[in-house]
Image (cartoon, rainbow, N blue to C red):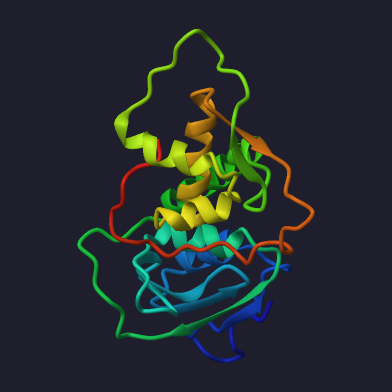
Length: 215
């Protein structure tokens, strides 16, 4: 990781995310109360985190169609093993009504990462399939009407990622929804089919307009 330029006051940082974590970079910017742009790129996300006096004011995803919070953006960056970062001092930083403290932000990202791990214990991958159980867990099951479209979709044993796409959900919300479906006892997770395509593409952090909930 490159450090401060010799003989200057401006902090110039750049490096790879396999050598230093995003949390460490943000903490350094907080301790030094820097203002500028932190460019981040990984397999799952890329864009800019704006920092003013060591606090995060906004994020700007590379895809302008994306609407994503600083917590989610940083999570998608860190979920990948590869990536790079570069910080440049810049005065023209977007303002924020309530800039986010770095430690608060890092804590939220770590909590989301723990949730991601828990979701994967129920739904191992987006390439797994969803199907109806052969036997219900009891003599009767009551489900919300909003869940019924997803239950019907599960009858065709779609891949998890295809089920999410059908309802306009990103990967994180897809895993949450499928987990909730599994908890009803109506559907189960099945291994990928041998005829399925290879591993799914990197996670999709793109948020879409509200759609009917899966669960």
